[in-house]
Amino acid sequence: MANIQKICLLGFGEVGQALAADLLAQGPFLELCAFDKQFLVADSPAAQALQAHSGVKAALWADQAAQGCQLVISAVTAAQALAAAESVLPGLEAGAFFLELNSVSPGTKQAVADKVAAAGGRFVEASIMSPIEPKRLQAPILLGGAHAREFLPLGLQLGFAGMQFCSDALGQAAATKMCRSVMIKGMEALLTESLLSARHYGVEQTVLESLNNLFPLPNWPEHARYMISRSLEHGVRRAEEMREVCLTVSEAGIDPLMSQGCVERQAWAAQFKDALQQDDLNPMLDAIIHQNQSQE
Image 1 (tube, helix red, strand yellow):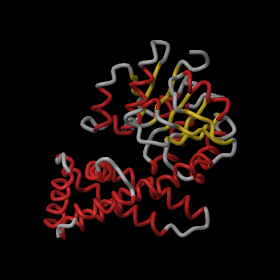
Image 2 (cartoon, rainbow, N blue to C red):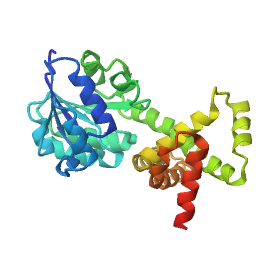
Image 3 (tube, one colour):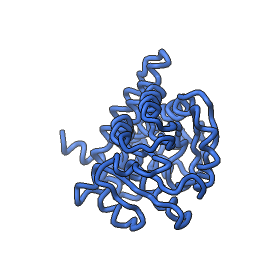
């Protein structure tokens, strides 16, 4: 691989693990060094996942992970995006690309870009426009900023088949992602609130049938279960992203009334992760309702 032989991966959650596995599968020419602050916690999900990725070298410190790398990929939670960038910059090689994958506002992207530029790096704004699964390395990703055109062919060579150029102007890719999240995460929150209430009154089937009249889908109960499950499994992370969405909407001069409500519902949903054990919609709703009532 010309130009990129060593990559630093910041963050080893769902996205980081998928990228690590797929990047290493590209061939032996690539070296991957990762840092996640949870690596130091023996029983943490990140530390356990690291054991299953034998080709990934773990670093003790973020700046250590970046040393000698031609590319740094930041895939942390939205709330940690700026701090993660600041932690890695002392070890950033001059001219190294910094691919910012996190779901944050245009303003946050700009703040990270300023830090990277001051450290001599080349910042590339990136927004993943779908869940990382099932497409993983081939997920659609919009690139933006002054170095986006330059990085795009390198990204494609690394296997990022879904990458495409968005804009030379920083913030356009992030705005696209954030405005999409108003809808996607908002729908998750709305379905959670609607169907939990409908289940209480025994009208969930009628509600789902009425939704199918306006938004035809092959299997609305299955679709609803999937969307609600995303909040249960990733509610904390989604709430962080929606706080960035609120910033994005505010930066546009709009009061983020709906997005702020979504922050609260996503954060609330995260406490009911055990309900994911139920494979069907109604048992999952019942599990949430039962746990919620037991807490009152």
